[in-house]
Length: 186
Image (cartoon, rainbow, N blue to C red; front, side, top):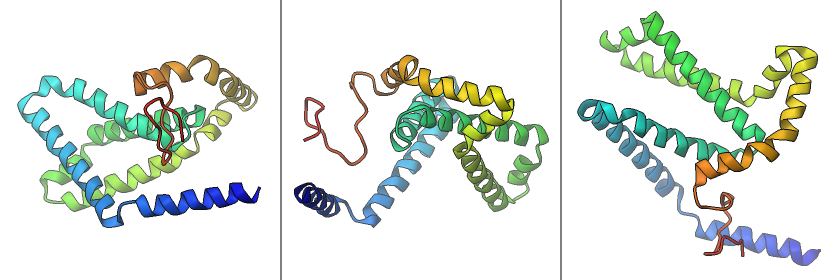
């Protein structure tokens, strides 16, 4: 048992040594987001008909990230779907009211951005609690539906979702665990 502990400790130390400095990681994320925004603006302005195809690719990348981070099960699926629903609902409300988008043209862009991020943070917190909402739908039936979903999801939906997200990969690669060419963790 002591050898397992020592091996894990050695792997953690190696991970820390291999990890890029924080500045490089943040710089890469900022660069990736800036590139995505530039790509989005190019698509909107020059090729608006290509937007649905691009949005599908972005949604799939985001969904794959959430899937990996949240463990790749029913909870990850529920979180991603809940968050997407809350964000779409927020955008529809903003468009229908027109008050927030009008702030963009009045020179209140900072207020709009702050409101958007606060709303997104609130949507994230709500999405974390999606099982509670299922339970509250109809108290006895919500619990039964959630229980059935936990049983049926791995058997019926998990493989097709992973096939859509990861294509030819047999299993999604766990975060932080390198795999060899055959897909096995060393």
